[in-house]
Image (cartoon, rainbow, N blue to C red; front, side):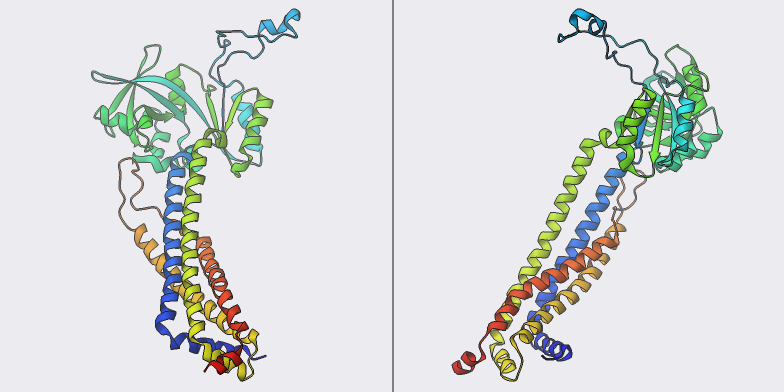
Length: 420
């Protein structure tokens, strides 16, 4: 059994004696790993951006009072129809209000829950935006601006002005970017808000809000919670929605079900509200990983072919090694060491190359009106991808060198020398 220092020295000599072939094998790993890092960093960064557009502004649990028909109809209470299948058509919703009754004690209990990171009450009003002769339908949502910033990244979508200005000013409004453009308004201007009762409320524009979704920005605006309650003609206890943010998003379905059972309200969790969007994200990630792994496998086949040809060229060397006392296992270790060295060198260079290109991409300008807060291409520099890349490089090159090394182990030196 020869020492590892001797085996490593012979493997290194073999690699340097065929510099061109060794370089091509290492470059195969380099470009495979490099392309993997570039592709997975960019695609997951892009997926994170798309997820953020939806999920950052979506509460983990939304609590509201849904207006719907009563589940128990008079026909179900009639004893003669007890065992029958009853169908009642054109059922009208039961008489109720949109407001959440007992909102204060519900919020008090939620704030004490250790799973809850925070919550934001809202009051939503259907309004008319009036500016001169222009009158547009829309929606005003009363919020607590600073809590919205803390829990739901609200500040990232304010392209002009600040949430602090809205928090301080009960006569202020954050106008949707589409609305501001359609009515030719900007910060400092005034817009009149009309409610369903015909009352008019002049508000000062303290900021412009842009979500990146045109259908939202053309109708949506935000005010202080008290201002929205005043527009609705309601008191300070009027709440139409409670948006809850949890420490762990996986607890959302169970908490939504618990709230519905205990409070008798409607509660929808983020997974249910965005089921189709999450499916699309999963499919995009699956495609990204499939393409990336394919690149690494192709690089592994290249290493296999080069090592296989190297064994045929080194037949005489293998015979001499075995004749001088090297066992078949020693010969196998020599060629496996060559494969691992190729994988390690090519993998490290590939990581550096991939990181360099990913950094370059992250500095390229990417500006669009739909995403005002994004200035460059999104890139995800998660260290896990670099660990996966180097581990896969080592594993793939080991497997690519195993079969050729097994062939070298079984070579009979007597037959080679006799043939010479």
